[in-house]
Length: 107
Ligand code: FES
Image (cartoon, rainbow, N blue to C red; front, top):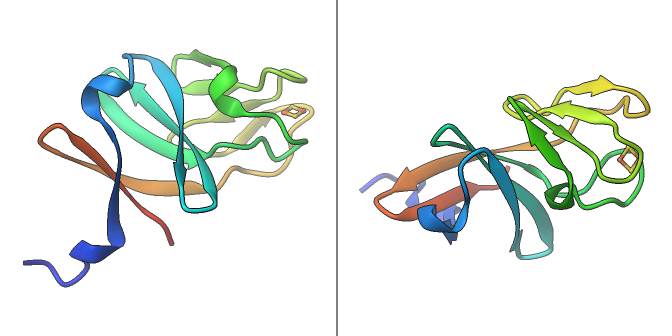
């Protein structure tokens, strides 16, 4: 057994996240946007760095997420802020898939 196994927490099942879409999950007090891009999963903070908008209500296009409130854009795999008005990158989280389970490790 890996010594860090207890840090990984299940947040969803693979079937819960439609392809090329996003859902919101909660891990303790942390709001997370969980993405499925062509079968690959990514996790970022679920809240836009510009104001308090929920990114799971935004629009996934290719490997970016557009915020539903002021249309700021972030690069999903890296969390990088790409288009105004967002200037601060999103926190990203490690994701792994174990069978049907999606697990996230918080820093
Ligand atoms: Fe996301 Fe303003 S709240 S761009």
